[in-house]
Length: 148
Image (cartoon, rainbow, N blue to C red):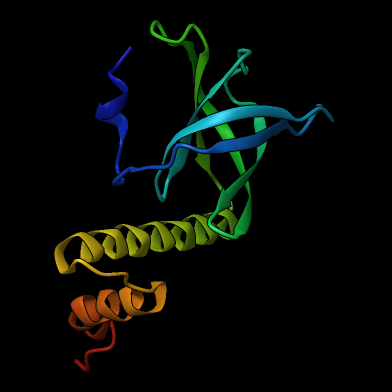
C-alpha cells in the first residue's frame, strides 16, 4: 500500500476539533476528532472502523460556523498510537469543495491573525487580518482576470 502522504495533492491544514460523522446509510451520528483538512478531503479519528467507499456526511465547526460536508471514505485503518480508526475521506461534490475552501480561508486568516498578534504585540481583529490577507494576495487574485 502506498504511503498516505504520497497520495496528497493539497496542502493540509491542522484542524483538531470535535466533529460529527454519519454514514449516509446509518442514522446514528458518531462523535469523532478531526486531524486535518484540505481542499480534497478530511482526516479524522473515530472509535469504529468505517468501511472504504462508504458515503459520509460530516459536520465541522469552524469558529462560529458549522460546515456540513459530503464525502467518500478513501481509507480507514487502525492508528497504532491511539488505537482508534484513522479515516480519510475525499470530497466529491462542488458544494462540499466550496465549503472546504471557505473553511481553509477562515483558518488561514485566523492563523495570520494570531501571527500578527505575536509580531505586533497587540490584539488584531479578524477583519484586519482578512484585509492583510487580501492585500498580500491581491496580485495573485488579479492575475485571474488579466486580459490576453
